[in-house]
Image 1 (cartoon, rainbow, N blue to C red):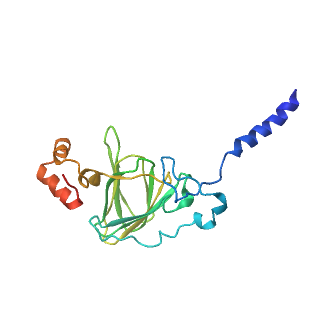
Image 2: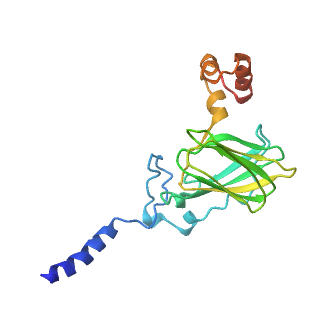
Image 3: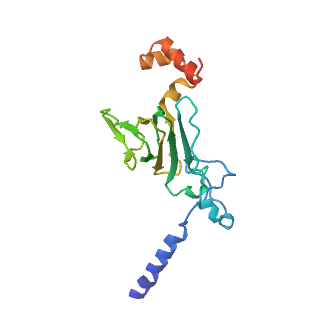
Amino acid sequence: MYLPSLFILPLLFISSQAGVLDFCVADLSLPNGPAGYSCKTPAKVTENDFVYHGLATAGNTTNIIKAAVTPAFDAQFPGVNGLGVSIARVDLAAGGVIPFHTHPGASEILVVIQGTIYAGFISSFDNVVYLKTLNKGDVMVFPQGLLHFQVNSGKIPAIGFVSFGSSNPGLQITDFAFFKNDLPTEVLADTTFLDIEQIKKLKGVLGGTN
């Protein structure tokens, strides 16, 4: 009676591992979906799929927020597809800011490489504010889905690297969601308590209409 179980257990273990892939390098020729990209054919995978060189160069901070984010998500770095990790470089010129935003798909960890960054997030429900000035070598975590921001509070350019618990954490910038589209001004006035002239000014700055 014991012989069948001795043979069955190893077979069950092997069977459970048969459908497990070591990785799923993104096939960027196919569309991205809710579960990420489809896997590239294993025979076409090379070591280059697992290496990304794009974070060595500073991003262009000559813009309205004086900041740049250079992502290494699945669309740029196919090797992270399906692994639940990704990274990005953050460059903040003096006075630069990453406005309030959320990542619906992942938590974020920021490590400061250069300069000083004032960062914070707001909890849900009670709307408790957590703020901290971060210096070189400091690390801060931003829980998934919560509004958060980063500001260069120093006099020199600040650099940070942010890692995420997803190959594509998603992004929604609050200012852009309100003022960089065709959401009617009257709706914004009713729901934000801002006056219409201020809303039109913000829409004009950010490219919104209506």
